[in-house]
Length: 146
Image (cartoon, rainbow, N blue to C red; front, top):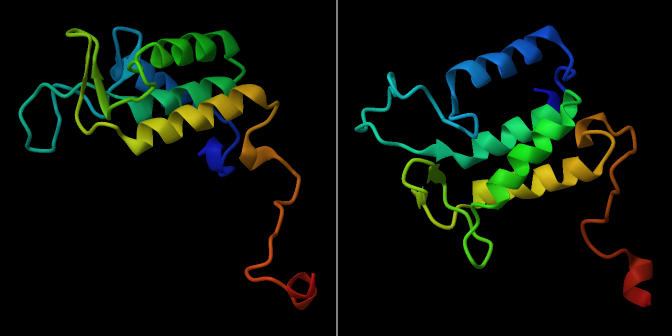
């Protein structure tokens, strides 16, 4: 919720959510599962790896909570899992040391890009008071004349 400006990152509800994820979904202190292994609830057999988009979500939330060293450490671990041309899959199996699921996965790459941007800013995009640039939907008469 802090990523879209609904609640501040320091709100107790957000902090408690991050703590619950760390306690119940953080696999080997490295990557975040999509849901608990003991209760997947999707009808698929066990064996899903860590969901990389969720792991990048945790990086963003660490940054917003001022936990910069933890954010950087997790971000670097995630980056180290890219293949030789910088691509990521949907999931990663830290036990087998291999990628799982859809490959390449856009959600994983969007998460990577968002985290990289958040790491370079002082605020989250949702907290930035600057108005977004508005571009015309089609060229104006003056632009067509030029």
